[in-house]
Image 1: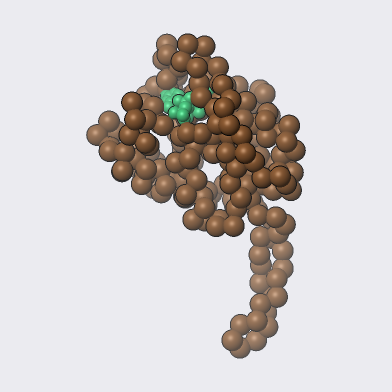
Image 2 (image 1 turned 90 degrees about the vertical axis):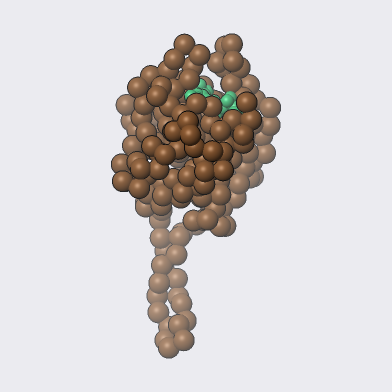
Length: 208
Ligand code: PRP
Ligand code: URA
């Protein structure tokens, strides 16, 4: 399996808190923000830099800035929305696109209902967000859609993954780097991740 599990102690601590059935929607959103920000810091370590001339109050100097166009953040609706603000805090100039997919509860196959993306996907580093990578069907469909629109440099950022989801994405999109805060044991008979955290969308938005 080709997956980066974020082992930073702060991330691991917050993942245990967010899994708990006793965590309210308000706290769930807050923790997801914090975890996303920490993960975002880790996964952007390799962004290319270029020189930039800076005039300080005293002298001119050559500093560094992120090279090229800024990033694109693409949440998979609805739950992926909960991972946008943490990334925007780090990268306020990023463009945000949206892919609407829901998983049919019977077939577990993704159904597309919305798509609005920045036009210059091929020139940006793209970070796709979705807290849950279960069968991998939704993430894989979103990645195909992005590639059809020209995206080439894509990272997939999830909170909790099942091995099956990682394997599906690895197989269908070997070029996409996958980052998770936790790699769990398996899926149950309804396609939910075990031990997991339940339905991420419902927990973020307080629906059932
Ligand atoms: C959840 C989750 C993923 C998908 C994961 O979304 O946020 O998008 O299921 O499952 P998969 O890997 O088996 O495709 P859901 O369909 O519940 O929609 P929601 O975000 O609107 O709640
Ligand atoms: N979607 C969720 O929200 N949770 C799971 O465990 C699987 C899919």
